Image (cartoon, rainbow, N blue to C red; front, top):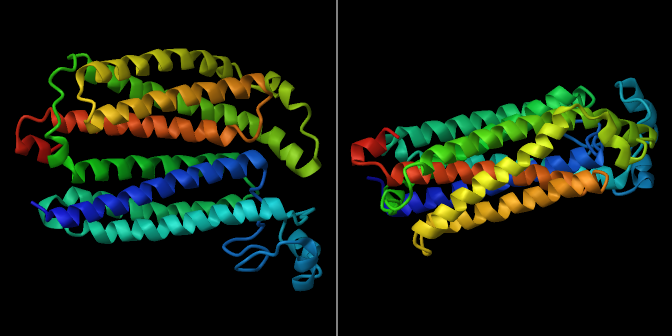
Length: 337
């Protein structure tokens, strides 16, 4: 059994890391929705600087021929835009901070190597994936915002979230095992698994819709002509309408889960609180989706919708792990969960 102080330390650091990863997802969504992906046309520096300039006049003092320099590198028509540059730069800063936190999480997990090496191994996997994620970030810039590389970049963040949540829950499995879930119906676990699968399917469909939007966003970003955003939906594949209708099933499935938690779990329980969080996230995701559909896909709503989808899945996964550890019959069962 690991020292409770060391366990608490790992929980705090890994939770901070998880929050940072979600911030990376939000920042990446903002960058993508605002067309700021090429705000810094080089990597890891930005316009050749560790800290980018705040105005084009300042950049011209540093690089008087920056248009020609970046045109020769394959970035034709590169023009400095302070908002886009700093949006992308802040995104990179958040990513760098996340990398440091991931390393600290790995250090904190070393105490589990004897008691539960899986926690350490998962933390190590997250550390390695963060390195790969940084490389992908460089490829995004080098390949001029290739949609498939951007999507892979997002999916890697999604995988990191999954591993972090598992590491956090597993490291606290003895505490989670003390939760009383006996009053929950037998179908709860199955419905929760179905809800997780539905969320994955919905995110996959959303990714395809997002790829359909990329040419329109790119046209608006480069040429200032993306057309009327309220008409963008006409260019979307049929899967958009499936995605929109499928949200109703997701809403009712998750509300069923929340209702069962509300009726059968003590209000001071961790599971009860996360059940309420799930309800709030699902409702917010639905409202943001309606806003995208009815208000012409406003750029400010797109990253919120993406973040909500990821938070819903993360909350569902954590609830599943909580339920799994709470229903474990013996310590041996928990250790193998």
